[in-house]
Image 1: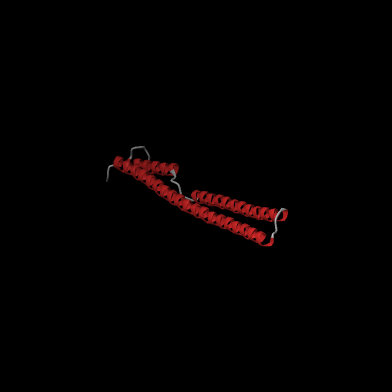
Image 2: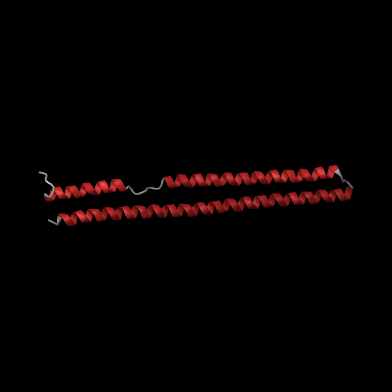
Length: 149
């Protein structure tokens, strides 16, 4: 029969190693998910930035078209100013909507990321310690160190 003290130490070491591996795996999953979220957020920012740039470009083109039309037809004054302000207003409203959508997508990404983090299995320190303690106690009882039958 092997030395009971050695068996007890082996149980403690094995439990410690098990906890270490569980924590290491959990951290690796957390890092992976953080990187995935960063990439997703970067893609959201890039896409919304392109959408905003396109909308601003279309507004500039519309202003240029209206100015050219004004020069050709001689339309000036309040009517032309109103048309140009309307183009600016519509463009500003669209850009604000795009920005709000971007913020909403980033918030959604953050919430999904947190939900995924909550699903990562974390090491159970108390459970592992109790299990190791029970195993050590069982070894001790079998060896006759702590009373028993």
